[in-house]
Amino acid sequence: MGTQLYLGVIVVALFATTVANAEIKVNCEKDSISITWRIHPMLVPFAARHFLGNCMASRLMFCPSGEGNAEFNYTLDDCNFKRLMKGKKLLYKNELTFRPQPRSSPASYVYPIECVYPRPKGWIPPFLNAGSGVAEGRGGLKFHMLLLNERITAVAETNVIALGSFMPIWATVAQESHQPLLLLMEECVAATTSELQANSNVYPIITNKGCLLDSEKGNSMFLQRYQSSAITLYLQSFKFGLGEEVYIHCKLLAWDPEVLSESKKACHYVKENERWELLDDPMQSSICDCCSRTCNTRSKRGDEWESNGFRHTSVLGPLIIMDPSQQNTHNASDVSIADQD
Image (cartoon, rainbow, N blue to C red; front, top):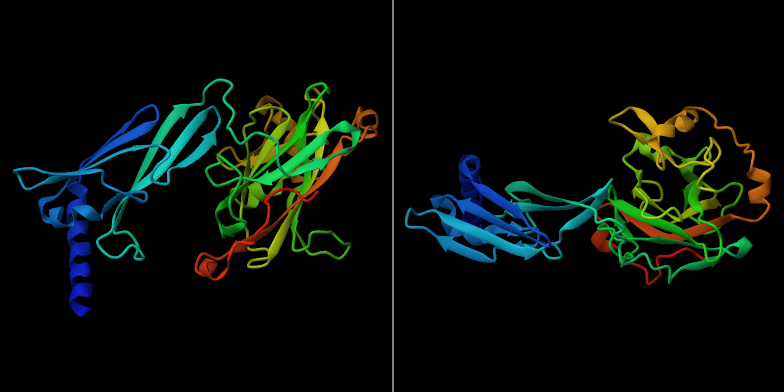
């Protein structure tokens, strides 16, 4: 036991002195990735401890010079790549790691991998099929709200979320014969109960008629829309209700996409610009300035539209936010991670 520990310390120290000379070549192809990682001669005996995400090298080669190459040739659906959407781009992210000690120990070296592609015109992820979690709204509209996985490629398979990670919440309204509508999240709060009471303890997420409060104090944001009738809230998990069942209560509004105002908007705070930005038209971001105070709740077309019942309240949950060090002690509930009908 002592010998193995000592060997692990020697290897870690050895790698720290040679990693600066490591040569890593990355080739992002259409649907795959090819990586060649040059291995120092002193680390060749530990070549199998080089990983891409959760994948071992697909090929190891050793050179007469004593050096080696770890080659990784995988599709972007392998190795636990994370797919993110940023503006008009699709990002695939992963990490190269060297782990001379058991996998439960931290990696001795981490090298970030990122492939960036233009988002295909008109591309919509396959999960955007409103076939689950249906909730009837008034006015003949059908509203949906559900939790997606971290890669934003499908409905989440678990309701247990690690503290600090992101939980993408997707909402949409089925328009049927209606004119094109814009879906907005007017208000969202987290609570530890599926029904809100006057004395309920809540965590505010979206307030002030569409201001994503959690983007100013955290890293949450709205993701760029695929279609006007759907919106994705990229919400960073929080300590509120840690370890308990948490429910997300949202007031959704189907609205005229041509009429935005202080009372009808989707705004998030962009830290790089130090200002609030309008999701649907950054050129009109002055509408969001009121997010730092109190927004005007009156709208010229409010009475006409809202009397038709284009609002709907959805409740998503239960979700369970766990500290990673305690997550293994809690099993996911056998629930559908969609809004409560």
